[in-house]
Figure 1 (cartoon, rainbow, N blue to C red):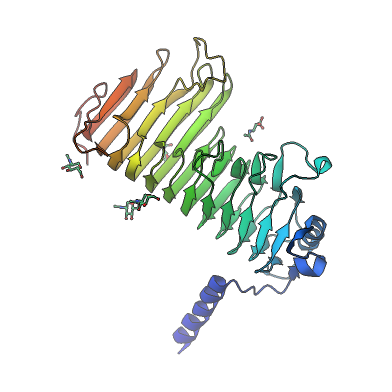
Figure 2 (cartoon, rainbow, N blue to C red):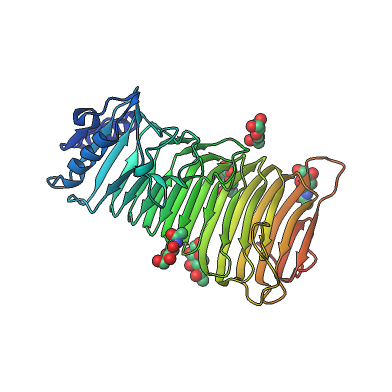
Length: 396
Ligand SMILES: *[C@@H]1O[C@H](CO)[C@@H](O)[C@H](O)[C@H]1NC(C)=O
Ligand SMILES: *[C@@H]1O[C@H](CO)[C@@H](O)[C@H](O)[C@H]1NC(C)=O
Ligand SMILES: *[C@@H]1O[C@H](CO)[C@@H](O)[C@H](O)[C@H]1NC(C)=O
Ligand SMILES: *[C@@H]1O[C@H](CO)[C@@H](O)[C@H](O)[C@H]1NC(C)=O
Ligand SMILES: *[C@@H]1O[C@H](CO)[C@@H](O)[C@H](O)[C@H]1NC(C)=O
């Protein structure tokens, strides 16, 4: 009987979470702080007031103070900052309604780094709900939603649309879990990365659908111990390590990407570093990847240069090593399915391609792999990669 009661209780908690019902004893509703939610009135001040109340709340026991943003309303917000640290160990922001950016922001409220909504120094922040975050495509901010120093962040459920540049930025945060997001931007919109990660460790991004005009996920310098799983990416530029900047020190390591699909994307799995940098990109695995008309399914570009920069011959490079691509299958839009373009200075070390089967979208066409200065092993790979040893040992 007790078991049944406990199961029932767990069932209630689980279903109430699904229905978005809040059980915190300490809740704050933005509407009670003066937010109107008619899509016209500037609700920024009400949100900042409500945030202050939430962040200053001392909850009893394990109670997590919760800020609710009710559904069926659209809240217009100017660029706003939500600062911690908060009094309670954890705070919860539950977004049921829509948050909308103005077409043009109040000029004086926009200060670098031009994030629209930013959360700073908030530990154990839970941001979830079925609401929508609409950046309105205005070219003012580089990030629609930025998290800086938000350890143990939990972000889930929301839909992010029309961000002018990057949708979500994670900076200097440890132990981050991002899931069940839908990110949508037009295919042709430039620099609309889905999720950018930098200077952060133990980041897990999973079970999300990302379609944008640039990278679905980009891992910038200082990213380590990042896991990415079950991401449906497309359109967009795939999942990228880098670009790791020009002339600067860059370090990315321990990245594990699995069970992802790329549909109609420009790239699939990509590592790109600028010439002239220093540092490393190492211990990176891409596993079980499904490709549908992906232009460049596998690409390492150690001499990345996009024309806007002076990429004269450099004597340094970001070291690329211990990279494994395994279980890739599907179709490729270009003839060059695999591109390992490493520089002459350091080359790429210990690159492994295993169980790859990439065919052209056009059945009669052959695809090929190109290779510069890459060293490593390969097994059961179609097309074959001439510069890798094949096979050196049995692959499992
Ligand atoms: C990462 O951290 C370094 C050092 O604190 C800082 O200079 C750099 O701007 C940060 N990069 C990003 C993208 O946040
Ligand atoms: C490589 O990265 C994975 C996580 O993706 C980690 O579990 C493993 O310990 C790392 N290996 C080394 C040698 O650091
Ligand atoms: C491979 O990834 C797909 C999702 O793209 C998933 O459904 C499938 O279970 C994965 N296969 C294995 C063997 O993990
Ligand atoms: C790929 O995307 C196209 C266009 O959105 C869609 O029609 C198709 O079903 C998708 N294919 C797969 C395998 O997801
Ligand atoms: C690769 O995939 C194609 C298309 O699905 C299939 O016809 C072919 O037999 C596969 N090749 C290998 C070596 O698995």
